[in-house]
Amino acid sequence: MTVLNENIESQTGSAAGTPRVRRRRKPLATRAYKVFRVVALIAVVLFLIAPLFWMLLASFKTNVDIYDTGKALLFSPTAENYANVLQRNNYFIFIFNSFWVAFVSTVLSLVLGVPAAYAMSRFTMHRSALVVLMARVIPGVSLLVPWYYVFSNLRMVGGFEVLILSHMFVSLPLIVYIMMSYFDSMPLELEESAQVDGLTPIGAFRRITLPLSVAGIATAAILSFIFSWNNFMFALVLSGSKTKTLPVAIFDFVSYASIDWGGLMAAATVVTIPIMIIALFTQKYIVSGMTAGATKG
Amino acid sequence: MSVLNPPRSAPARSAGRPPGARENFSAWANRHRKWLFAAPAMIFVGVLIVFPLAWTLYLSLTDSQGSVRAASEFIGLQNYLTVLSDVDRFWPAVGRTLTFTGVALVCEVVLGMCIALLLWRPFRGEKWVRVAILLPLVATPVAVGMMWRLIFDPNIGFANQLLGMIGIPPQPWLSGQDTALGTTIFMDVWQWTPMVVLILLAGLTSLSEEPDEAARMDGANSFQRFFYITLPLMMPTVIVAILLRGIDALKTFDILYATKGKGGGSFHEVETLNVYAYGLSFDYNQYGLSSAVLILFFMIIIGSMWLLTMRKKAVSK
Image: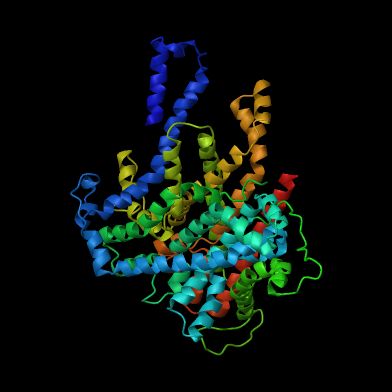
């Protein structure tokens, strides 16, 4: 919107003979492109936002209103769906489960992954890195069968430990990948001068490199948390009734209440909102994580 | 993957131990820090991945099925023969996997490139567009699937209302046998084009301005500059985007299973290899057979990645 206004202003401004008129008029093609760009950007934003907005709207509608196409935008909102989902279906427990699994698996993956990424970056251990990054490539189902075999024999299926382990399988390679490209782009000099000043190599890593890589670690942690929060397949097989995570709970919702669209949309909103709020506050970290290593050619 | 873009080599410094220093734990740890740091992660991955993968390979040679402890017999390559001669489920699933990945990738890269070019030069309100781009990316896939299920519902969905406004008859979308796969591809494009945009945008901003400026001086128009200057320079980044996205697209599970359920719908209309293998394992307990499918699937993934990295090396040169 602001872009549009600016365009109108600059045009009327030059017509009215303000100082702007002294500037060379831009060629017609550029102005046409400017208008096109604004229209195209608005279309892109609408395309990305509208479905989410529709989901949010439906979560505040009664099922009667959802079926009434005349009440697409004008309806009297109700919080009933949320009350239903959160209280009757105990989604607070699932929210906690999701949070706990994502949190613990992220922390443990950081503990394992950050030093590993450091060593792999500093000593260019490409083959070792490849082993860890293989995990990004392997289809999860091929691991789930043996895991399920072993863990059900150990009577661990349905516990938090298995879920956390399986989510670490997603986060660890992610963290190693992000941190490797972060350490690659970090100058060695500071660390070296710290060693000259008498720190041991591990001491230099702990006191110099780690504090300097807080931004990178934050990036890795946030992305790892998001991917773990959103993960569906592992929890579908390995979680029990007490450890069910949100995505699985929502999926279950369909099988026993396939027509309760309002409730379903409220449940879908409940799982999406926390992660979106985190994303909004940590934008730049997510972008740098998503593009890590992509531009080195 | 970083492995494909080898990091600048750091000089390996030997942890110099002052002569005569007492050999204690700290000195030992410092000398071996390379493996001390890397080993825990590698052992974890090894136990959780390499070992299960070997097991899957073994299972694929047995007739294991049913309960977890059921005795299974070694039957050699029988499962592979069964799978490879299965024209009802396996080969259509291979076709769907490749169609899904191929179509989604083409749409995502072309659309992603267009959007990245739109965002390239600074403009007012950039922040808001970036937020919009981030939202689909972090949205939970299962919730996204549910959201599209409502929007694409044949009777009450917004998609058909929209079509109605411009006079097009309602479409069955997800419930149609022919339209379901296309609809799920659309969902994938909605969710993951932003990731391609971010990667390409990072690539665009790191391009040097000079070749573009020179071409402009020579009188090249913007289309010529894009196709002869920017695009060739962007090829390595494009291939990285295709690789990162392609791996995940091949393995797509959440959206397909969330929208169509077991077996990819009653006519298996969205049953890709991943959904097929999952169904064989956890809906029907055909462990032996599903392991064979998975090994073949894994080979397809490795094969396509290998092809792409070869292409990338050729482009980078």
